[in-house]
Length: 449
Image (tube, rainbow, N blue to C red):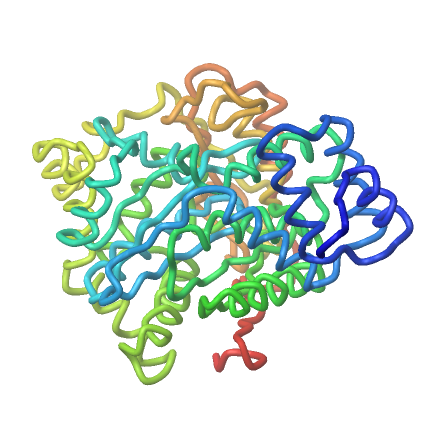
């Protein structure tokens, strides 16, 4: 805007009045955040104005682009097909591991950037660190060589990836603006799009164990992120999934790692396999490697059945610092020898018969966090060996005395924790199986499923 001098107070006043900001004003705000020429109070005021007065899809897209361009945007070999997935976070969410194991068997590249857990949701990196020797700190040259030779790496965001998001997220955390969906869109997509992707699948969770209470809110978030991705040249599909019930049968880092490895052998829980097959399948279709989703799902599951997914995942681990000896023990299912186990295992039994009508993932995960499986505040130490193993889940028929779950702990699980886990199971007379996938949304409307 020639002749117009931009200032933060003027931009703040414009948004306070409910007006849309133009691209130059949003860019000026993000640049001011990065060069620290804006006062902390002005950052908080702007974020609150966004929440109270709203951001249009155009404003959200521009904010995402500016946040992404505030740091390094990866440029890969143009002959490669670069794909990735992102989950909004849930309970027992171990989908990333079998998904990358299957996908990396095909001619695609997966530069997966993942985070750590906070609160009741588990973190991908925390689960990987239950395997001794795993190193997520990779140099630029190591990333290139890994994608060229192995096809996948798994790491955490580096300081030069969307640095504006780090400041904005820290401010959102202390100004009650974390849950505003457009800001969540920009935070998620600025980091994922900085990976230099061709295709992205988003697992948008809704229900008790997620940050999105309603299906409608999850659909809005998914559609908005799809539109942002498409506008910025990335084929993006959102899968809205149920998070009232824990995924699979395990909660906790080592327990979930074991279950994910079993999934790679073709022995995974049905709901976990479905989530992996659908999300991997979408990426295979978008990469032009399958004609439709049903074909692509079978292609992905075939890599579990023939053992190649497990071997590929062990190759990924060894490439990132895990010893060949440990990889061989995992191959032989010597999980306890590699990851250890909790000192105590307490069983929770059914006190009545009927069908399990629900399993409260939030209550269960909160209890597990309190006896060490996750963080209550950043910096908390995690006990990788504690957690919960479900023996029954939603839709199962049970009799009095049947074991519903095992609580794995090292002496920190109190009677109250055990009671909370027990009360997470609701037993009644109606059989209600898990419906894990609620909707799939693509660029046109809904993906065929």
